Image (cartoon, rainbow, N blue to C red; front, side, top):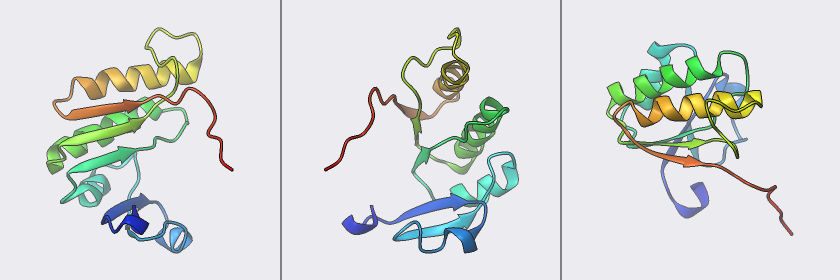
Length: 123
């Protein structure tokens, strides 16, 4: 995005550690588990890219993020999910992403779910 001249913001937990790693981004401090910081990070954002942490409590963190996005006036959330995401999936990561997708679909925002199906290859 930065190379294309697109203005964007990256939410990080530690701005000092992230400085220089996210080229061209405006860095803001935030935590998926804290709604108050999310509101500040999402202020003025029209489209948010959600790259959730894979940790216990992931579904609740994404719910908090989606609610904060709606309150901040975000129009669309683009979520990086997983292949086979489904609330009834046997694989835990697919189940968590499926639950999160369903919640995001029902929160009243535009949404896009990205489900990569094979590893990225580069040359």
